[in-house]
Every structure is written in structure tokens, then in C-alpha cells.
Image 1 (tube, rainbow, N blue to C red):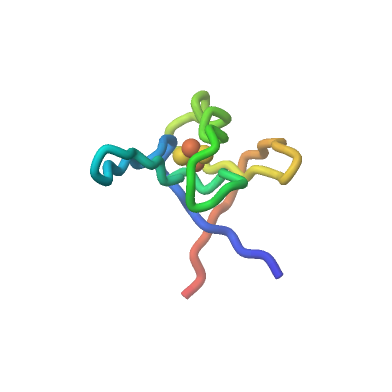
Image 2 (tube, rainbow, N blue to C red):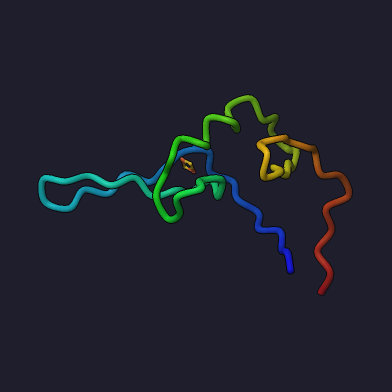
Length: 70
Ligand code: FES
């Protein structure tokens, strides 16, 4: 089973709880969900208006013809 989830953030959401701070992954690439593990750094050179997929091994491919079927 597999699914594609479209994420547009390329950095974490910082949440402060009292004196502590946690970083929630918003890019979808962290291996330590829901926490950020800095995998979002792979997205820094993504081009606007393009869609990418990331393989487990970290390889990035561009997705073409993304189409929503309803
Ligand atoms: S925001 Fe996803 S790994 Fe940092």
C-alpha cells in the first residue's frame, strides 16, 4: 500500500510549551514523525511550481502530470 501526500512547507513548525520548544515536521520527510529531523533541508533547492517525490534512500524525482481524480 502506498499513497502520495502533497506538502508545501519546507520547514518545521516550532511550538513552545512552557520553557520547552518542539519542532513539528511540516515537510513530510522526517523519519521521526511527527518531529522534525532536519530532512527538510533536502527541499531547499526545490523549484516553485514543481512537484517532487522523495524515495526512501533520499533520491528526489520530479512528478509530472500530477492530476487529481474525483
Ligand atoms: S520539517 Fe520535515 S524534517 Fe524538518
